[in-house]
Image (cartoon, rainbow over all chains, first blue to last red; front, side, top):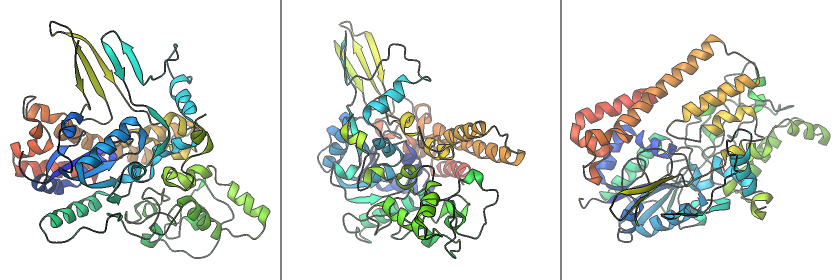
Length: 329
Length: 153
């Protein structure tokens, strides 16, 4: 092991897409290898948790931590890596705002486990359920305890920087890696603690080349019901529920450019307190009606408001979870 | 009884640990493989619109999101009883072929390959894609990276 600064990456409740996004920075990955000793990164190398436990405190310079806090292992790993790391980055949507797995906060633990272990598609005649502790003849086995509410990384440990996105765009990761390398070589300074990095402050609409004209929405439409999508006009003005008005820019409006609505994967823009509330405001402002009954009808054409407004960020919203999850029914 | 814990298992997508128990003769008495994670996709996909499924289920696995995306898109086709036109099918096959190509390079160079290229006894710090790049040299390493990029771009 050389005396290069140490780098780690870890996943909690996530999918591995953030790891692939880092691998996809292509030749820049050689910069990571050239400037750091990679000491822990389960998807890419074989170091174990006990190896991390043996490291001196603050001996890792940079940890990219992705994944939400779904169970006791996730929290233990967040605390361990915080203890061992100087710069801890909340990396990707799951760590930062819960992401798609945060939608589980609409349900109770019982509902989650019943659906996973007891539905018609599950072959489980004994109705076996996960046990946190299982006695076996050879010794006790343990799995992590599942929590009723998924939390974000910064609810559990102190976070130095945020890098949103599902996943963060690889060219953005490459730029941040370049920045950290420049800091190591004394060419620049780190941004203020708590900054959002690898993204821009404004909304996807600001990067979107589509034109916005007038308030024209009489009905929200589902994509499969649209025969032709106008290639120049704002998707929202065509009735397609696009999350661009509330979503942080940085991706270059990739989806709207491809005639697909923004799904909100970069989370709320800089001045947005609650993503869903901001998006509701934006949707309301394009509805072409002053009649309350008609407005209700138009809003009813959104098939899944909770999923539409909180698809990626429920765990970081003002409510964070629905009642069944909070009550742990 | 002696216990050997491998936590976490590495160079794949997902969480797992292995508990190996040895008897007094040092022989393996029993082994348990555990998957210590559950996210609840089974639950939170219920009640969501069918057109959401490709973008929700692609977050099951970030190494193979295209496979989940395709499966969900096919399910949506089945829900509507439609047979996509030839152009759409070809686009799907093109996307999936590009994924297939990239996924093999991911496995060969980053996940499984280091066991064969570096060998199972290589030092922990080198038994990975960085060790592979050092072993084969920067020139070949760069070609590998370019090959991966062909499937991504």
